[in-house]
Length: 396
Image (tube, rainbow, N blue to C red; front, side, top):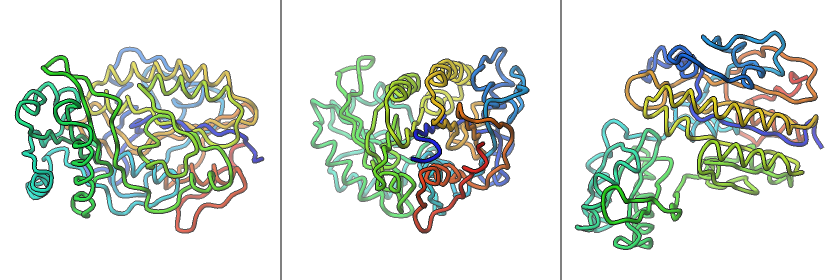
């Protein structure tokens, strides 16, 4: 067994902590998700994150630094090109992404892509814009049901989503169309991280509901990651939330879908009550999907406060041979223009009840220190061609 028997890595999706040096090239100069949230709200109660040193790392208006944080903290910089969810997570586990996944948030999909998809599916396409899944149904589902047209839309992530009414469109037909879309979007200029089938039920506006028959057609990671190493060594690799979709199931031994970020933390708390050896890898997506993209500062702050309460429950369950890592995959500054992710560094908070030291660690040039540290903990080696160096020896 390694230094730590269980490692819990929680990704607070989009909790950036300041613009990266190249942020201006992405239109993101001056962004700071966490800092601007703090500056924009009257109250901000996050005592458990405070105890882990979040305000020691990143000064906050309402939250003071603590004299003796529970653990260690640092900023992680992104080495890869891009600012999307898959790039951030894949880099955490050792992959260096030099070609960013394509996003079509501002423009919709190119005419040539839509034309080919329409021709090969035999469907007239409607939508073709960035929208929330519920809003696009209220706007266009009645038309789809009446005409047989096909709703295609995207978001700020690298995704192409297709809606289909389970009764009139049919699941088999929806999946067939998504398989065609996945094949088409393998071209470099159109390459999206995921094609998502979004089935729904209902007959009129206000009554449409998405169903659990969603199916993701994801790209597999371009190479072996830290997750593969852990699984191959017989360790548990347990995912919570979007992790399964992000890695297309690669390197996982168990996956748990979450209904919300609060539910994801509740699942993590239940997993912490179990005896296992390995990694519990958690993505909490509501920060990004519900609040960052919608530029809702108050909602984001309140979600962080809800997370902090559940974090307190998790901290109480941690054993001396457990390690907790809290981080993020990119930024999504709710005070910034547009609705896209923002190119930011992310926090790294590390804590174990067995730690006797605490304080600021050297900022890292890549998110990949996370995967490298986890693999090193279990006496294993990262796959050839991956990036990132372990900082296990600095966690004392």
